[in-house]
Image (cartoon, rainbow, N blue to C red; front, side, top):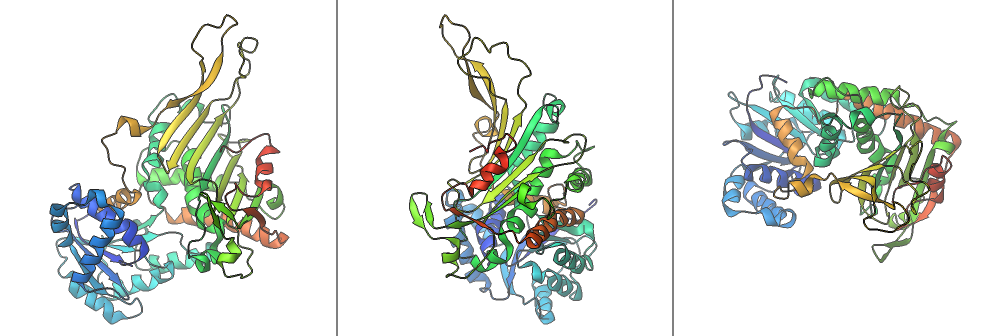
Length: 489
């Protein structure tokens, strides 16, 4: 978007919800603290049931004390809390949008940003309500949380409803993983360093692994999660976005459409996994009772009060990208709840050397180089390289694999580790769409995932139990090992 008028009001629907309390309002406060919110900018929190403004401000202060206590500053809070107000809006009541319009007041010299932190089922009604109240202009922006829908059909319905009010250029679809510093550093690593891009292909890379492991269970979200499962909840959005950033071709520029064009090409090149391949290329798991972080925990079915369910809490996939760069390079995706440790990482293993001059002289076999990009809990990038062991042995050169630390955390120790939403909110306010997901990306991702789900249904592929605190079903290990690979743990 170009020549945008300055925004003056952010309307946060679902303003007293969990996401707003934990992430969005703390992010807005921190942006204000760093001088990144202009004077006069207002934040209006809205929900079907929400405290009056003064009580809402007090509740926000309490949330900041919980989630960013070390960053609280009385001077900043005095400025920030004056930006806050609240108004009750029921998406089904047009008169409530008139009340919102009165709260917003004059916007003739600036524009509005609407943030939908609600159930996606309400996105269409919210958009129509805003339109009916005359609050949508050609420069208004709407920020929508993902995942959007539960399959391609439902996502298209929601996108059509929002698209009937807002043009695609006005829509910012959030995947919060794209706001993480290390994810953005992946782009810098690939496209700002001449030594990496020539190696980023099938000739040098053996395989790629992407893991999102959680130690928690469904944490009171059993009803929601049971309708979604790990494939819809994690793979369709977060994991496929990470895969796209690893696999995409160099864009012509950092222009938002140039970057997203290349991501869509990756999704279109993903080889379908159908009923003929689901048993060889996918694993479904569901955690049983076990131990997590040293404490006993119930199984998934026990958390659902004994209700029967075939929903997967773990999924592992072996994917293929059918293009020149990646032909023959497997991409392994793995995500699950009740894993032994919490981490998100991209693991890239390079091919073995064709010949070793050290084979007869070293006590340690040569290992292939590995690049490990850790996104959480800590953010770091490490390259594993072979190195000579210091010292005199008299029996030749001894080698050991050591990490070459490419982490930005050591270099920028004075920099605060930002919440991913800070970057995304700021980009939405400025109109920069590079880190947001385009509608055709959503459609391509759902189309690929729907094929897997259809294959599971057609073959009646069941979930395999795994003990909480383990790395999933043993068949996930076999998924990689039968192709000569091992999961990085």
